[in-house]
Length: 340
Image (spheres, rainbow, N blue to C red):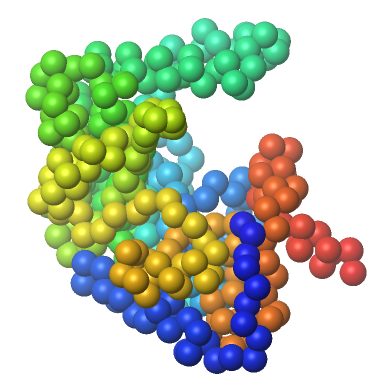
């Protein structure tokens, strides 16, 4: 992300007071207002652990681990010994640096069996990535609209058991992923149900509210963040989630279910973040690429050393490009250091 110029020679306390003001979220105290957003890094083992530990040591208040599955499948399920050990290890590494850690619980809305029909076209190149997204959206629409109510209720309830396991692994907070299945149930574009899980905005909010309520019952002392997917129609942007005018329905229902905070996308320009925090418009700022470019930027700002920050220049060469090349998320600054 592009960063503005930093004031030189001025103390962080005077310039960025709001960023370093502690905050309490659902009974959990964050040491400052900077959070590492859930990020698919494409890294495994020690490489992933080193990346997370470096970000934690750099001074942010909390790291959100993205896409923690609520089910039993996959290599990193909370239910398996391997998965539980993996998450416990991450919690220990992050806590060792004085940083908090949050588990983003999610349930996919992909119908994998239905997607198999597109595999030959993808492999042969007849179906491009741009053509694939509408096809996947139609499958999500069919899955959400046609799912038996009993199954929907059971999936929502399973967020609770996953939250318990995450708490046992050492996580400090739970984030319910409001995109994926929660977002598809919430969207009038995907959800065409006529039962209690559809129809009105309140009906479309039911699945998400039940997921949050399940977490609250299973882990009563845990703060619950909800990643709120907001879409728009003029111009059209996004398919899952809720319209702006539907927020007065969704937000109170989620709060009553137990949500203590909401995560929305904003920006990560430091001066902009400081202004938004100081005005009270936001309570925390979550970011990803800038903390990958320089994990220590919160600590550098706190010490009054903002002039030494490695600023993300939005080149996408080693982060997004690294993912596309199946090399994992890195940064051009890492590459420059390796060439020295």
